[in-house]
Image 1: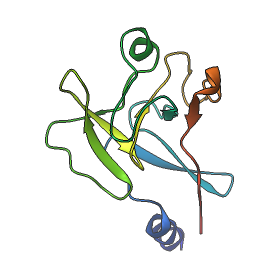
Image 2 (image 1 turned 180 degrees about the vertical axis):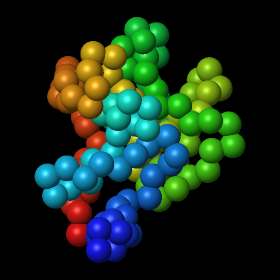
Image 3 (image 1 turned 135 degrees about the vertical axis):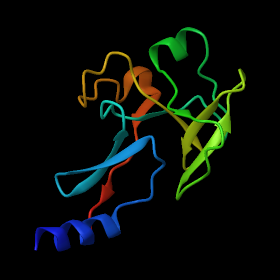
Image 4 (image 1 turned 90 degrees about the vertical axis):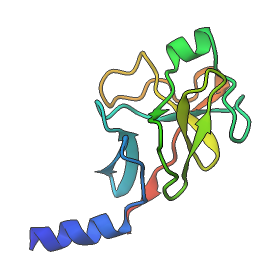
Length: 124
């Protein structure tokens, strides 16, 4: 029976790239990094398909890196940063983690009025 429930839940979860995982939390799906279940953020000062987080910004807000050859999946696409590395973008917005987050605890949401957690997706 539990396998059936898991299969039904997995069927309604959003599609994510291999570097991202879906966690069921309080009736919603939350997207976190696969390595360490870190919260994922967007930056208001980015442009669609282009990261403007460089230098000190990228040191504090590391990009969620897309490996060479990564392919779009669902709302996830790959952008190319100015240094040539791939970065995942959600709904056209480049995504990041925050160095001050501990484990899955999000501390950067709303920071500077420009950083926002990825939206949760209601579990159906």
